[in-house]
Length: 317
Image (tube, rainbow, N blue to C red):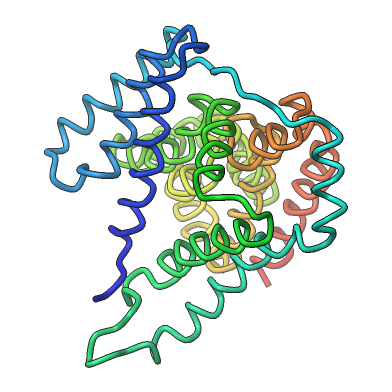
């Protein structure tokens, strides 16, 4: 049997379905019915979304947006461990705590590099079309097993911790997936052409440095709005990058794409819309949700400024 990306979707859907059931059974959650419905709908997208018509998936997405928009996603009550229990566990495990986290990228790399050799009876073990993602899924499962072995906990405790983190993030957990598709929607809707019209009409793009700055800053700003550099890339590249920097000034498209995405990542450092990067660490550390963003602002602005000059000097060599 070949492990495919669909198996990974089934796994994510199963975790979300269990989260939905646990939420519905939580009498301490004042919004357990609407919250449970939200996570159940999200689970359905992963479990049976491949079998559903696109319009049905669209209706599910709209329903989830309405539930979240009207404040229907709430957090339940979780029994936290005492500081003494955390300290005792930390002393017992020591640096072994990092083993599961480090195992994920290690297994992902090994799986990706060795996928071509993992063929049994003419059937590849990992899907050749999505080797890295499937390897990442395998790495996460094996890391969970390693964490259970090290901490002497059960997978059920892992599910409880998963639900606690899900409750802490709330509807923001869905943002990466939805915003990732927003770039394609914007591209098909002609937003890139609208950006090109606005920039060429109201900004003097005859100056090459100005065109470079518009592209770099635009990538960061669109990422701040969308929360995803991949969503901003087709908009700014289709509106400014390809027609102006490459078409007019004959710049190197490879350099433009690389530094453009890096500029988008600068925007990722500045926005709560990038929930998986900025809100998840804050939730894990149980600190102010914007603390991570505030700490990243100086780095983001300095790197963004450097990107303007790097793109200007490297793209037109």
